[in-house]
Amino acid sequence: MPETMERRDNVEIEPELLTLLSSLGVNSSPKRIPLKTVSSLEKILSLILPKNVSDMVIVLSKDHVGSQGKFSSATRAAFPSSKVTVLFSHKLDKDVTLVYFK
Image (cartoon, rainbow, N blue to C red):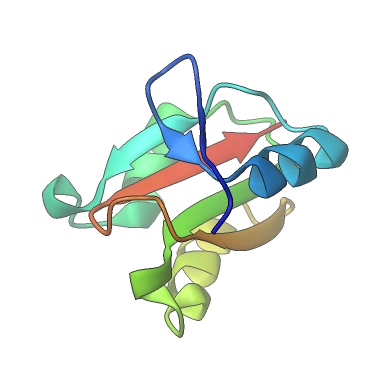
């Protein structure tokens, strides 16, 4: 299993994901969303992200494989003109979502 790299904000994800995120040109500091406290992902995204977001990458725990459509549609509802990519991490806690954007 690959080693993890620690981010400045103490979020650990795989180096391969960091490389992919870098190639997508999104910011290097994600917005960390604790899923336990969020009732509407659409509303929280519209509150914490700038209105002019053009690309978004959502990193979920591997425990959410199969539910990427739910996250993608909530994101598209908040930012209809934004491109949305959903990635999965084996190291991310199941109750945390990371949102990278540009």
